[in-house]
Amino acid sequence: MQYEDFKTILMERRSIRRFTEQDVSIQDIKELIDCARYAPSDTNSQTWQFIVVVNREKIKEIEQMTWDQLHKKAAEAETRGLSREARMLVKSFGPYATAFADAPVLIICLATPYASKFRDKIFDPIQLVPDSVWDEEGIKSSCLAAQNLMLAAHARGLATCPMTGPVLLAAEQMRTYLDIPAECQINMVISLGYPVDRPGLMARKEVDDILRIVD
Image (cartoon, rainbow, N blue to C red; front, side, top):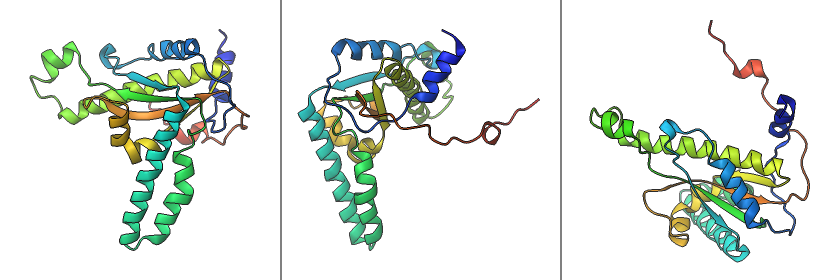
């Protein structure tokens, strides 16, 4: 592959929230997970797992539990005198957090516990860092795998949208519903399907605004 071809895939990927009715094949899903697993990870720990929901009724149920928790949070805000913020939560954030509802596939990205020979033999014995840091290591690697997955989906003619709204609102409800082990963190969800349309290029910060070179 030429560099320009790869850059085109990077630049043309979009977060898509409107999907056609076309189903995504299990073979396509497995291909995307195959690409995801080649992401880099800390000491090759590969701290990722994926739950893929292809049942549209179950996706709708996850949408409903997200809305239920959002309305609960809004009601709590109302009792604290935050009526304006409560309305904004429902009207602005609600549709944004549940934009996966019409997708034919919903991927739940998990971060598994970080484990390696370095941790077992060196890091933990000397108490290098608090245990909470290892939770962060799992999330970092899971995010890298998710990016691989989304780029592969775009290259295959599919579309995705990564979302943390359902995790912020209904992580525990999803954990129970999907029987997710307690030791796994729910990192994000990714909707997957065939796009109705592809939006144009979004504005990006200039390279010089985000880069500092130290010589």
